[in-house]
Length: 290
Image (cartoon, rainbow, N blue to C red):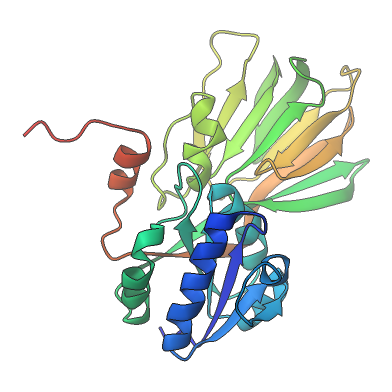
């Protein structure tokens, strides 16, 4: 894989991010790459760079490098997944499940990337559609999860869950988390959901504070269409959120369909990438006894 044009994305007001962006620019210029810097951060960079929107980076770049935490990666990835562009992350956040490169290793890891010594991985993403009276109102994508939740804190709602054409249950709870394997280490994990290894073609459905002790997370085929029907008995509107970024209002009687998006996110990992090593490191699991 030859990367001729590289896009750089990061948080505009984060000084450590600026340092990494400048390092990346210097390293990429040594490799005679065309460098595009997202418009929001280009003005804060000391270098004379070519500014571009996130969509323009998706359209023109062969590789996009996101500098920041998982939140920055998620925001960029939802747009970049629409295009045929590889994505890699430099971790300037906290956990960094999706941002593999340490800032001090930028030169070494870029060497691996440009020498094709990497592990490329395609991750599926979700699409959430809200319908009112049978008509599509809004549609948004999600890398990690789609969450049905109340618009007010600590309020219960009533809804029905269908997997394909099969009725699963009706429930009174604070909501439901529908997570991809990528998102199984995010909000779903906090809600008691299982960790799904990235290559699994599966979704996890995690009830949020259900009003029954028998309710448990369910893992289903990722090719299933998930339908959530919001009961008319709800007196207030509820919400659907995608990766905690996009929030869609949903009213009693509406229904939501969640399925695989036609687009995929292509992640580039360092050659020594190992998912279980990531889990041990980020979740502070114990190492081998001997």
